[in-house]
Length: 475
Image 1: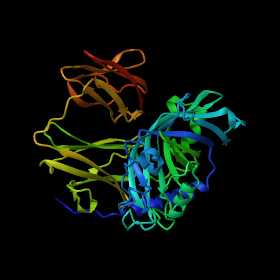
Image 2 (image 1 turned 90 degrees about the horizontal axis):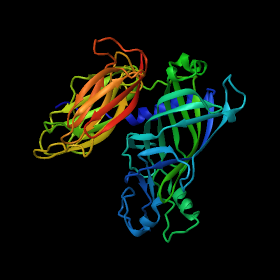
Image 3 (image 1 turned 180 degrees about the vertical axis):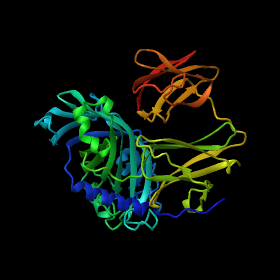
Image 4 (image 1 turned 90 degrees about the vertical axis):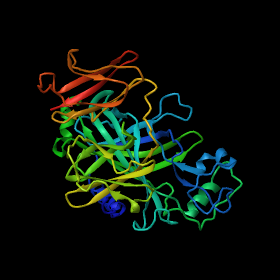
């Protein structure tokens, strides 16, 4: 096994965010939206920090333990949550409905911002890293210095004018940096509650540098010219159809059932930020040989040399070993790419942790993870309970690359995955058997001829299940 990694990600991330914020502050947004009550759900016990001080019954000397006493069950805001899913709340939700209004626009198509709207699908949490926001070289849980960086991705949407779709934006992603609160801020927050709890917080016990409501956010999206009004898409042509996203004045509040976020959403076409890689997923599983297989997908790549994979039988990155002495080369596709690596070095039973390092042409690196997988004796991956058709990624995809489609087929089932054009003609087909498999389509028909740009449908047809989804091909 090879050398241990050097940790520079957090300092680089902080510097990048500062540069990014400086660039944005000098630009003029094309659209500014006010977003109220964006809902965060599906917490799955993912938490950021814990209200846990000497005056609380759960105190164990660790502010980051997860309390399960009645006080926490009665007041879940005492854990500050991250969400696996962030979405527009549907009408009729008892907690409220997401409201989005355009408050300012700088486009030549209308002088009335109220005529402009935006809609988008759910964002998925793809990465959460606890970081030291004050001294990046110190442990993340240093009192008064802690925070986190969350990445949300995989959303698509439209900007509308008078209710008509004008601009299609795909592969939207953003990073939220959250500084954990000071002791005084937690104290003041608890004191302000309409329903006082019978415990207090010492104002001198700081978790982070504050501010309690001091999150910042930035991200990107990609314009889809094929599904956009040409005049609107042309606004982004000079920056490679990249949409720059900024989130200001973020306020998050936790309720009994959900968390809600208010913020200003600014969209720019002035600057394409130099972000070498945007990761949309990083997962681990077992193959038929009972070996750990790592899969990751990027939403975009630029000026990237490649990737390294690190693994360890512990959760500490400092103890991890480089499993890729030969760098995994990057594809540097603006629409993203998909990668897979089998960790053959770890074949004994046990739980293993993995990190992914990206390296750009300037020698800067970023770390993602950790993710873990457990290898048991003679473990055989279970077959799916039912057959299902997953989402294609990337989508849209560029001819010459491949779209990957996850297919799950239950025990004893089999069938076919077919690709069809808008005329209903089948342009590709793949047999599928029981188990979990990824089908890759390279945009070619059975004769090896490249298919035309446009909308295609991929259809799963087995003895027990039929399902169809949409796929977009660019040339």
